[in-house]
Image (cartoon, rainbow, N blue to C red; front, side):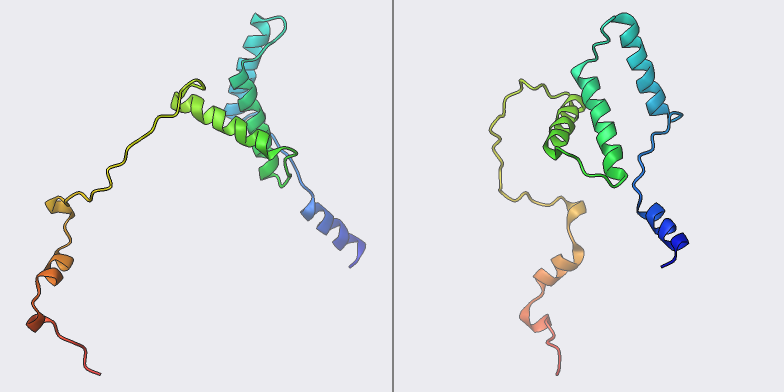
Length: 131
């Protein structure tokens, strides 16, 4: 392999993390962070905002081929944000859910006419394949 091929191979294998500063999401997040810093001299962001920023950064790292130092941290942040989006509080308790396993009767629209006809056939109507 010559030097040019080695350089091309190195560039192909090189991991690149790119953040598009013109993307609407990045612009919106920058605006929110700027607002917080203007309102609070210490610039304290909410835990949800910090989680979201970490998730975006970690997601970009994963997409770019990098591994995370602490994937459990990523998973915990992801579930916290999913709970926020779903409106589930961290204080919500697990509730036992009873499931009725009895089969429900199908509505007329759900009935399969071919299966229904096969079930109604008598032995005389069933034709066995000939070998």
